[in-house]
Length: 226
Image (cartoon, rainbow, N blue to C red; front, side, top):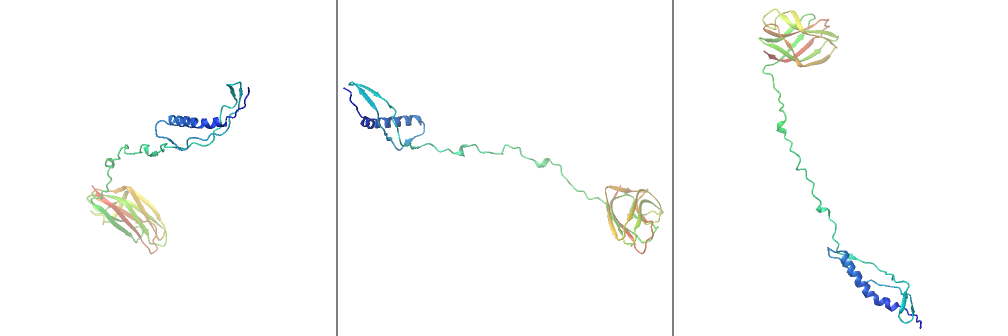
């Protein structure tokens, strides 16, 4: 005798078994940290379609039951970046500035400054030191005349025993300059010009053009050296 049987009740009977299996599988899958599934058992819906031939033979045509719902999992540890190693630059070698060469400025033992004032053309004048050489580092030249002037600078030959005597000749070092009216220029010599003539160290200057009522002044800066 063929009897048609509905298996809706069988599906509901299987729900506790499926829920228990899901809980066991969930705990096995998340071994390690404690994991909690908050919504078990899952609701199972649907029906089993089957035909029965005879007394005990059954053919289930849809053995896979549709399962609805969701699984909520708690207890998974949060990911933290605080476990990353800290970056440190303490391994860099220290910089020792004590190995840098010391820089010092030395003032000359015998600094020199004087001024030559020229108010007459073709009349050289000199300044300097006795018994030593004169090393000149800077010349500051001002033309107080209304016209351009030509200036001649030389290492003089003096007639007396000092730089205050008369200039009777000249030699190197030499310099020729053209000066604009009412202008000042400055000449610097990182390597000094050294003036010496026997026991004297003098520098002489001369205006070789015609002064028209003005003057030319030369400031001399340097130091005396053996």
